[in-house]
Image (cartoon, rainbow, N blue to C red):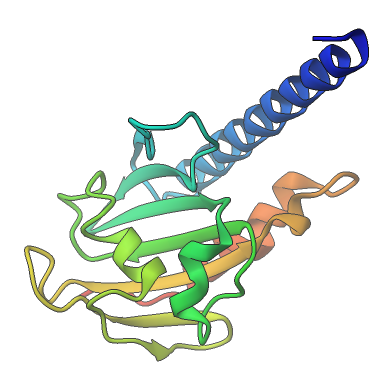
Length: 182
């Protein structure tokens, strides 16, 4: 590899590492604020799709939180193709999608709950207020599970923005306005 290609390669690695470190920091900050506001009990875990075939950037990065009578799944969606079936609710762009569902015992069940909402797969869906959707999951283990979901563009957390204020305005205030599950 020539010197110019090596420098570009190393620069790209550094950029991606910095980007994912920023996403991790953002999710940790969101967690601290949600716990301090009593909107979540604890951080349960992190998840990202792992490929057994080709090294690549994952299509999403997900964090799970447990609450009282609900579970939260926060997705950093990097592949806008995940959102293409859900044009009514979400812009097809890299962003954060937050899914609150009524199965508090299943915060880590990514494919069976949060991803179904993101992909609009076997769910009912209706608009609930501004930029929030709600509905139920149909079929499978999640049958009848209620959910709320909303999207937050990455740009609200951009350079020069107050991250804590952005989290308060675009995440905490929306979650606080959602009704409790019966």
